[in-house]
Image (cartoon, rainbow, N blue to C red; front, side):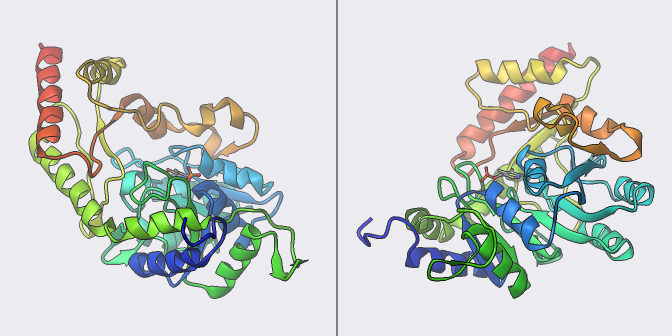
Length: 352
Ligand SMILES: *Cc1c(COP(=O)(O)O)cnc(C)c1O
């Protein structure tokens, strides 16, 4: 506030550099939110009206909306029931069925990287351009390689609940300076000189105030991530082996637990909702991410294709079974104990 520069200013550049250093991505363009970052990233890699973009139906609606903002068409492939991330086999079937698909938009759901080695191999074989939606996955990695560095461009969100926040905010990141430059143009009205506009762009700029908040947050990002991981390890140890399924991370995958999401399988399809209601009564903030696949969002009706003729059984099953419990950095040892005890108490009664 004291700098007098409430809109763009020097903190934005500092934040771009510092976030890039933390995430291991050399070129960063700050934006006003993660949805704008996704839109700018897709434009920067060349997504145009009529293009088909293969993506997941089990994500926040912004992922598909950004495709639609480009005039392109989302094609949904099913996810892995174990992680909720895109299933490489379903992706390959989709690519075989529809040779018009040129782009793959991967989401790293809940803070766990999607299976990038397999997906990048498919991208190579089918000549796809890959964009990563890293909105939930700051500092996640596979064998030390950070998310955002696999594809041609990545988008991050710094919304209030994300692992790093600027209130509202986001960024495009890339290992390719030309992609980053095109994203910068997309987010800055295509401006290349003083009131000179080379291309049609948008006003997706981050404010200096948001960037200053982000710089403060960045100092704590690694420590906050470790608190999430410690909370998750506690839940793993306490809840595993019961009738609920705890999240899994393959060897070498650093899960950053944007959400700690349980699966609550049947016998009947109300069981997840019964646990959610019980936790609400106990004053515990549990939430469903996400209660329906994007294919059943009214806003998207008629605007997408489904690979392989319309069935997404894993996404449907997860939508009916998932429940996220508090894992964020303000959850301490006492709170997490209370959460786990409440869940085990409920389970005992429910199984009786
Ligand atoms: C939060 C989120 C977005 C959108 O980010 P905003 O900053 O809220 O616009 C996009 N994709 C996923 C997977 C998200 O979780």
